Length: 344
Image (cartoon, rainbow, N blue to C red; front, side, top):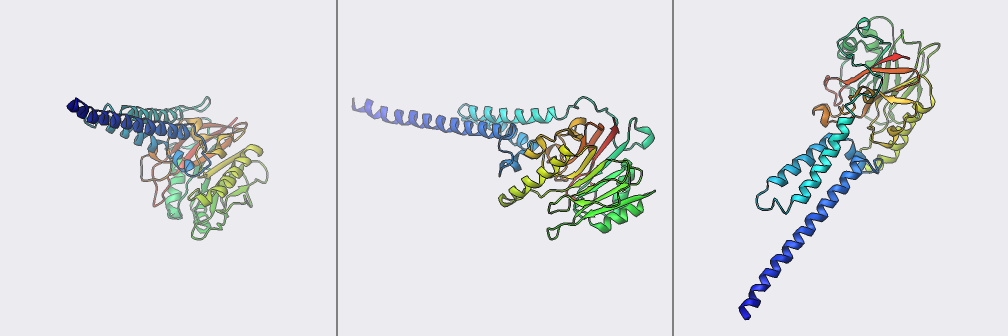
């Protein structure tokens, strides 16, 4: 009897440890699923740190997929960790599904390429909009080459000095107008807008009221209202309120101004509160089926980058022909984004 009782003690301990391990794995798996729901849906995307996480869906999908694979190949504990592996796999599939959905064009845009085509070769082309946060590190000559390559008519340049914008305008053929909004943040260049005179006459622009020089240009006579935008980034918990306010102000322009084209580094993705409802405006990359490709940072594949640079257009007056992220250019940490639009 004594030996039997002594044997039961270690057995009970093993069962208890196994049960405890299963409970721990179940709790961790439930936490992973909860985090997946929060980031996939997403919930609380205007709050720290969810806002930062959801901007990198591609990274979340890859991390979750790698974790699932590693958990499945761990020897001996493979079966015990199966619930956690399944949770990671579900999160990976869900994020990948969102990226796939955003790679499907919405009804309307054609598949004409935005780059490497001239004005006469792109059917239905009325306006080509290029946006590029240059980090004030891309020379005007390089920008001029890029503008000519995509045959842009409107160029929104966050973090670009007035002198670079004016030099760019002088380098381009024909008549171009350079407008600039100064930055209130030290060591960050303001926001510039360079416009071909064929688009319209824009003698001046007014500040949108944010800290980084976003500006609104209303034409004298025919032409769209142009907005070059650069809201503050959500780089810290303390910056969240200003980020929400400034991105909401950009979206409000889209909701309230007819015949508007907004371009710039919006420091927000389609998952963030400001861009979930832009009223009659549509996101050009989403319409063209390229919204899964990000622009920042420029040194990672686009599917792992954050799609925070945008062209938003009033869908009542403009149809998206195409939009795409371009290759990294110069020393900027962003990739350029170009959109081809046609009048309805």
